[in-house]
Image (cartoon, rainbow, N blue to C red):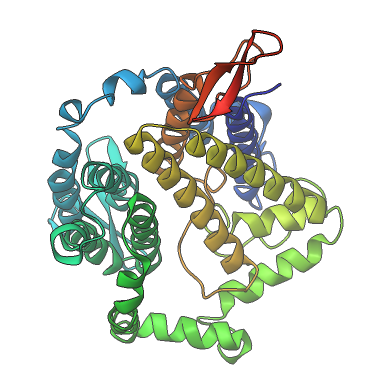
Length: 397
């Protein structure tokens, strides 16, 4: 019987391959006569292919990390909280002249000689491990608001605010995943419900202090009220999806990518896929995400180490929430936000870090105890002799 880790590997490879093909298709443009355009050779030696190979290598290396030995005891995890100040400094670097790099009016990138990265991606995954560490180490105190939950909220809020200033969607995603990790670790749900008015107020302030966010909300309610401005993205995305119908126009035959659909390689790549591969292609991608998330949750549910369990849940929540946000934006079910589709939309830092974190889930699955038939042993099961046969059979402790 295939393992959950195998399902993650197959799904991730399939999504990366589809992403490579669709990003290459989205790169197509009207060219001069005699220009060969996109060829097999140009795809194989492209930057996107290099990133896909790097992502697979990182996933493969991560899959063989002996997590159960590294994280077996609290004294071996002292280095995890040290990532927090590093992440905060990285987020502040986007405002340093000569290092910070502005794209589309937002300071989200750090550009060094031969290297460009998005600190919010580093923070998205790094903060996940910090929150999982805190939840595992202080699980016995999380039910206390002041002594247990407040310090965790401070660790979560500072990076989230720095990210939300430039990228509200990613900030909300990180905050949501952090809250879910804390609840899974033992924090009381009613504490967060009591803070809901404060969180809503912070969200409202983040929106009304940025005019373009207000325009996006108005366009979400009625895209055709601003067809050439804030509503343009969603209108062109819906046109691409509608043109795809059942089986699409054919790979490479889409029209919206030729200057009509903005961000066709990144945030709106799924619209290009729908136009060229139709409902069938969209269903395949959604099925791959569903398979990956189900397998990831199964791995998380089998962990007996609290840190591993919370980390696995955090990775599952992050990939699932990011995919859901992107799909709802592209299909007009949510306001336009710059959040990429995991392992599919063009990306460097995002692809590599996502693949590496999924590799950690595979490593957890490899370390899960199994019976002689290869089936995972559910935590809490022990073996007791049966009076009839004298053999040993599993029974709940």
